[in-house]
Length: 92
Image (tube, rainbow, N blue to C red; front, side, top):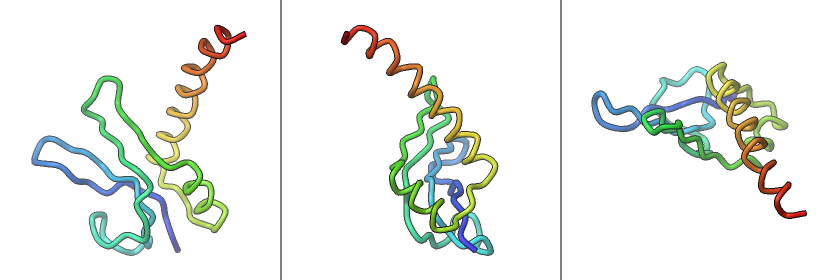
């Protein structure tokens, strides 16, 4: 079974994560099927950059997002909508 989850990279005490598609049974930082983006919790606000088209593809193919990835995608989807709303209002 495939899962969309975070894989930790970065130095000690300075975590950065990759958003990856991997087999559920493999260890956290092991082989991945595809890299979809990254997440940096150390920036203010936290940075999430993912290829939304590929995420949609993998979800349609049956991959299950982890609880953390699911909440990150939901939170950053709402932020993207809020950020584009004022710009759309100015474009009249």
